[in-house]
Image 1 (cartoon, rainbow, N blue to C red):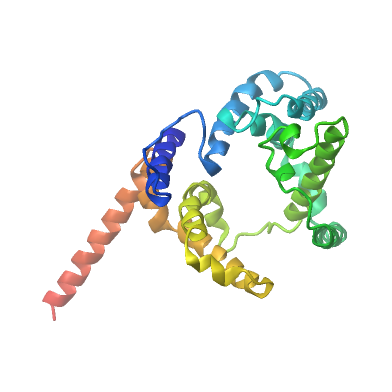
Image 2 (cartoon, rainbow, N blue to C red):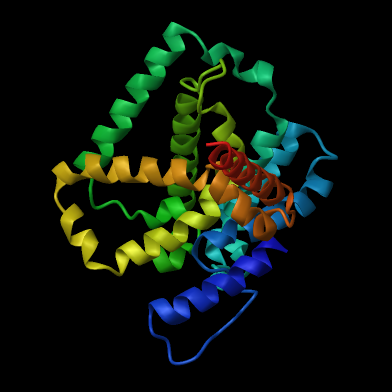
Length: 272
């Protein structure tokens, strides 16, 4: 349901943003970031079968399918089929991982290795700016990326290894204690679904012209951080909850607090 709701909202949004001649709503062709909800639906269905076999076998089979699926040209963004198969091995790995599997990451030695991995990967991409970023998206067959040879599987497998190194390097720095921003983590789906409206508007405006130089990237990162904090705040999640979780509990609590505050200040004014 959240997917269908946001697919309709994004269709109307694109209609006005791009000045389209007619409104098109296609529930089978997900808009931009909405592919994740479609793939998540299929991943949970596929999990019913894959979870019944041993982890090593399940991950090996899913990886083989993901590597081979790139040779089938008609499997692309439609129904998010390409991303569903390409990212399923990572989803499956996350399903089998447990907290104790990650405990070895939280020490000085592993964090040093993780920091070094970040530096090496950053330098590598900096020195090789012509790498086709579409390999990271998993949305296109090998043919559309000009690599329909047998070597394409090796390249995709290499990006799997790179993704795993980066994921575990990131996890090594995730705090294990409670901080002021810890509770914001439960609202990541809100940020994911809502940030597209801001990003697409930004790309179509003249504001982006001020962020073309490398020295402006830090400012862009700061704006992104502020946007993340805004979209994960109680106010934003309260208004978006009916569309994402199909519930009104947060909005009701916000309304109660708002009217309670009004009554409080009204009494204060009356009492002088």
